[in-house]
Amino acid sequence: MADRVFGLFSDRAAADSAINDLYDAGFKKEDVSVVMREDMKETRVTGDNQTGSNVASGAASGATTGAVIGGIAGLLIGIGAVTIPGIGALLIGGPIAAALGLTGAAATTATGAITGALAGGLVGALVGLGVPEEEARVYEAGVKEGGVMISVNTDTASRDNARRIMEDNGAKQVTVVS
Image (cartoon, rainbow, N blue to C red; front, side, top):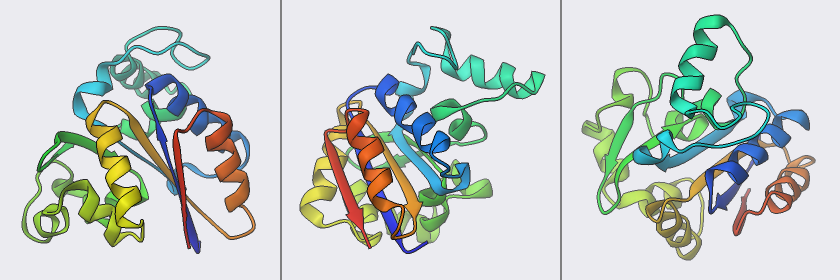
């Protein structure tokens, strides 16, 4: 995977739809990341996966019953909150969490190297992943305002498809990092 495509969505439903479309297009769950404020995990969405139910509850019951979980709910299972200066508690799941060292016990507590990586806020973390600083500031502001950032690891041949999927689902900012 040589490229990463980032998208910022104003609302949870659009982000969830984009994730499902990425999966439908053949992108794998392990290549998709989500960043959102922790208080947004309780947001109600409608659609094929949750039909207006509480997403956190739906994810838990789906995992218990073995039901297929798509979109954001599937990415949030087992993810903890990380406090980032200037924003507050964020949920970070997928390859971005691994890139920042937010796996295992560290997923709920930012200490050591993680604190250093996040000391510059989400902007610093995104710049470290190759996002230009000006665009990273747009993502941080969007997440701070309640938006959802999605990224997908992709190869060069598939990056335009990932970009199109995000744009078709209403992403207000899309960035490709090679």
